[in-house]
Length: 566
Image (cartoon, rainbow, N blue to C red; front, side, top):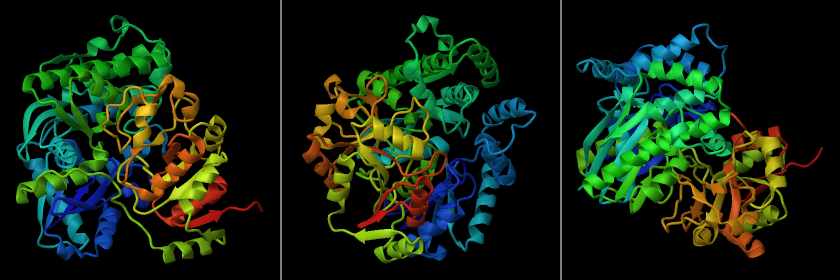
């Protein structure tokens, strides 16, 4: 049985699963070329159907998520969603009443469904859009927001029994949940109200520091490392939240906290503000995890939701909460809700149990004839090589960076060796050149490494022998490895690695070749995109990025494309 999963909010997208297996999953941004695109995911739906060679009439079950007041309002008036998207991404001038709009947003998002009315309206509007694409005689299920987040983690974790914790800004009147996953069922044991949202607090700090909320929270996390540590007793944010058992409680309303954050930012350095906000996250969420683990005696823990993208927090949870085995769903934010909703409905209808995923290569791929035609269209010099992994490794070892495009695109925010830019892990000069010409990252944002799984113990001092395939966890590099990793670590020697096993043989071969030359299986791996744009999807996207950035080397499958100086 096929199930189409869709999500029409922030970072919209679609997926198709068959008998509990994710067959294809794509986010709208990759096709529209608008980063974190919003709205009904028409392109993603069509791309998923085309990939599976299905017609709309082949789909009888469709799953979506979230029917609270705010989400339903944007389904009624899509222009509201579009205008907020443009405002949030700084594509339009700041509105005169921007502050009031923020207060209104925080108020509206705290409302849930009104006696089922919002859900009925959402169903009607979603069905209307789906019928425009040719879907008929289908059953539509709208899954609770945090249940979809929980399902995304539980049903892909491989765990038989686990605690599952979800935390984000807000969805369906909640900002978090604590669940027990056992025998293929998710049982919610605690809910955290929208008015107590620690996710919205971090979003507010992000916005008031001059960044884009729902996008730049990672920059705040990285900036925190550049502050001198201060004691929690001097942290002006620390009394904003408290933890009581399985609940996080906010001292102030979201509008009140917004005003207080403004005042605190006024007379504190940005780095200190970021540090204080990060500490609030770490202290309170660690306490929540500890309480849940102690109360239920379950030490296998999985989690999802936007806050799960904070790898510094994840490291604290991994080391100090008392958990034994851990798993973070790779597409932890709202962009993963299509998969979560589809997996939940699949389990509800068919009872198919959890299956561990070992990769997230669920996106589109392209055949070699198509690729070659695209290269010829651009009149570029190219050759086909049967030793492409080894050749690229040589280029990297000679202090080059390479655009690397292979196979099926990754699902989620991280490039994991199929839509990546690769460079040596030990060269700050190459890192700086890459940043100047392509990435334009903030000065305090580090690049990330891809590491052979068997070398992780040599490199990281706190490796727990649970290989992180998906860049969802923070680790600290051993001091004697600083020189070998200086292009992929933060100021505090922390890193967010991808640990490569046998799931991507071509990519692994490349890193193994680097290891033969340098003695260590590690390279710099950053997402294949220009600053502010989505990760490339198609060969055309890749070639356009190469030409625009005047990058010399691009590899697409086994084709080496070289931009010669003219």
